[in-house]
Image (cartoon, rainbow, N blue to C red):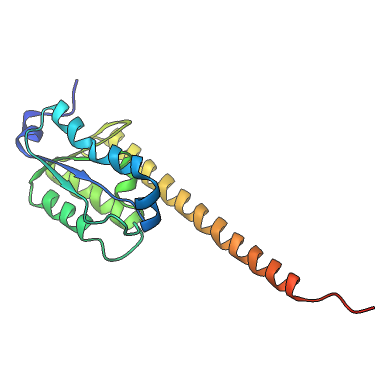
Length: 170
């Protein structure tokens, strides 16, 4: 049983591409190639109309100004999106509010979410549960990264203070 129906294929597939920082854009080119390659995957599933949204390259997922994500939500709400493709579904939004808004809108209009692990229909309770868990895990992961970064900065500052204090003269 496939979750992709003729109704989904009659609408467009949207490939949402995002990398958070300029450093990722420069040094993680394979990730970007894989993301653009999702358009080919959409064709393999049968979509004729595919729209790639890459407006948010170099923008943090936690940031306020994400025109590509807003454009994606608009297309979903207008009923233009049959599917949203991403390498990892949880990377579509990096905060709970955006993630749950995306899932809710997809469920309301019947848009499926496709990533490397599967095809999710937010109208189905089990798929919605899995998507919710993926989003929660993504938020936790981001929180842990922030904590580690902050602790590393604190330790670096402590080392700098300790090395700037000269030992007493004898």
